Amino acid sequence: EADIYQTPRYLVIGTGKKITLECSQTMGHDKMYWYQQDPGMELHLIHYSYGVNSTEKGDLSSESTVSRIRTEHFPLTLESARPSHTSQYLCASSDRAPKGHTEAFFGQGTRLTVV
Amino acid sequence: KNQVEQSPQSLIILEGKNCTLQCNYTVSPFSNLRWYKQDTGRGPVSLTIMTFSENTKSNGRYTATLDADTKQSSLHITASQLSDSASYICVVSDRGSTLGRLYFGRGTQLTVWP
Image (cartoon, rainbow over all chains, first blue to last red; front, top):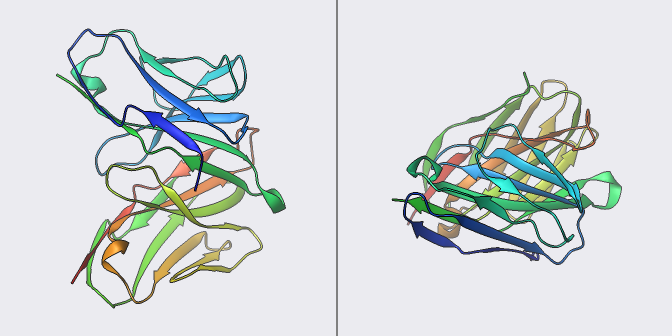
């Protein structure tokens, strides 16, 4: 069982509100990621981090921002939520497993609905 | 362009039957390929991971194969159970960057009926 947690699991919020999605892992992984996934579609990388004070934008443009002040936390923030932000957000972390395999572990996801 | 294509998009089978899911990729340079199971509303969970030199790997009733020459992989599920109903995602990693970028397929939605 992977030790990576996301809160909240579900969030319904009004347009214009500021929200922060939390992601924490207790495995000491340096690499962490945020993905966005619409129903029936593939995961799209929106942010990633190699370690503390390291953040980069991913393949899919996103109005969200992230921070990495501590190894175990990688929160994602939307300053002003809009209905177009409605989606599932998945957090993941990775580190090198034996034999050079990089294993990625995913959180349970946050289902965000902006009304 | 690095891509991962999966087929079929959806599949319905009866409990106890076997099925095979397909994954074709164009990711280069190739590092490894994984199959994930994603239950509705949850995060993906890893089933198998294979590198260039591995042709097959099993995890219980799940058996994954990899043909690195044709860039194809399959996931075979034997004696399906109701709990196998989920989306199965093929994920390919490249080794051309320090990120070890992950490329995701759209998944095959499997439904197992009693």
